[in-house]
Length: 356
Ligand SMILES: Nc1ncnc2c1ncn2[C@@H]1O[C@H](COP(=O)(O)OP(=O)(O)O)[C@@H](O)[C@H]1O
Ligand SMILES: [Mg+2]
Image 1 (cartoon, rainbow, N blue to C red):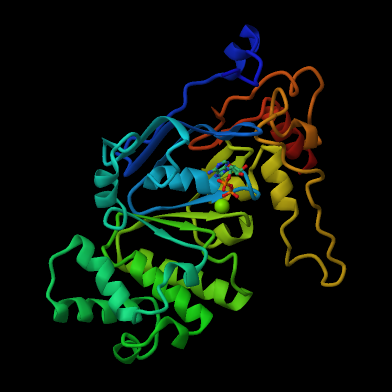
Image 2 (image 1 turned 90 degrees about the horizontal axis):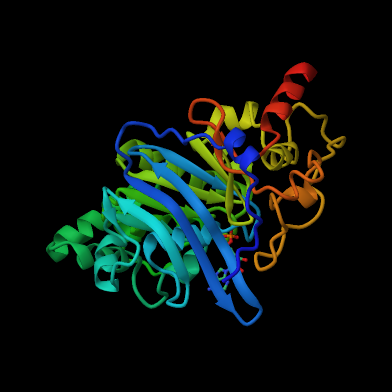
């Protein structure tokens, strides 16, 4: 297996590598050096490269990146749902216990009960031939010993929690009797049925119209208030995380490029890719009709043939020849809980300050 990336010159390594400071409180989920590759007929797909992050109790972490940046592969790795041929290295610890390499029977106990997933497509997650309430009960019965009566009561309670009106009647209906938005809520009810410690929501709003999107985010907020679940909210839309997440991780071509609290990411980002995502967000202070969104030019690279140096350099307006196309930037700490993988981050920050 050949490493597509050149070795970092020693002088740059010293200057740019700082040890990553971690928060002291024990993380619920601790990912270290996670790397996932898929051997394919076209070559080795470098889907996720050397990811490290913590998810703390009672927090919502937003994971943002364009389609194909490795967001779903990361969540599938956490849930142990990657195909057998995937080459996984690194560590994923849940409450200190290693999940990488665990057999399926162990992961089955983790999935749903400790770490649960909200899927993008509620139709695919719900079985059309069973009543919604029975499907929720089934999800609970897999992990807990409860009577039929208790299961039904719990299903009603969960439907109520996700904002389904008249849950005592709805519990006996079939998925086709629910509207799209209601089905999405029912699926979320199923995901939280076992009060998981970690809830992974992978693009939970992408297939939905704007009104239902907002409702689903509201449901996530309510889950946060009423349960103690930590949430990983995965989206390609930086706007979606704005009102929901405390911390944000930005991914590009399978790598973390920036990570920080929400204020830092929105107001003090110093990674050109994040800055590009921010400038393509619609803004209220621009006159309607006069709206000109800046899109990031070009396409994300092939994960089989990554460009040398920083994977973003071919699209980056700040790219410096012989530096950015040669050196793979490390994710380094540039402020409290703010990490950036850009060699020019300080220069960019200084330039932003001068520009006001
Ligand atoms: N089973 C697989 N086999 C080969 N390549 C895969 C497989 N699953 C995902 N990939 C590739 O991994 C990359 C990351 O995919 P994914 O995590 O789904 O992106 P995202 O969720 O950010 O849109 C993509 O290039 C995708 O084609
Ligand atoms: Mg995805």
